[in-house]
Length: 100
Image (cartoon, rainbow, N blue to C red):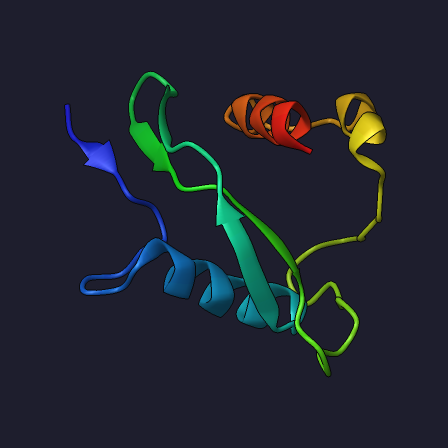
């Protein structure tokens, strides 16, 4: 079974892919601050490689807009545990909270 790099296109860095995806899906520009540890998540039929980053909105960026999503919500790091997240998101949240 192979590992899916998801939305990282050929010859594209994970940082560039993240910036592109956030621009397409939320209409925002970001400044990546630091990478969190990469990890694999096994969904059974597919294993995905996650490339999480801590980012902030870039100066002059528009506020996020739900282009491809139903709603958006800003939450404090302590509020992340109350959200209905995908299983692959839990290690990202744990890593972020451990370094925040």
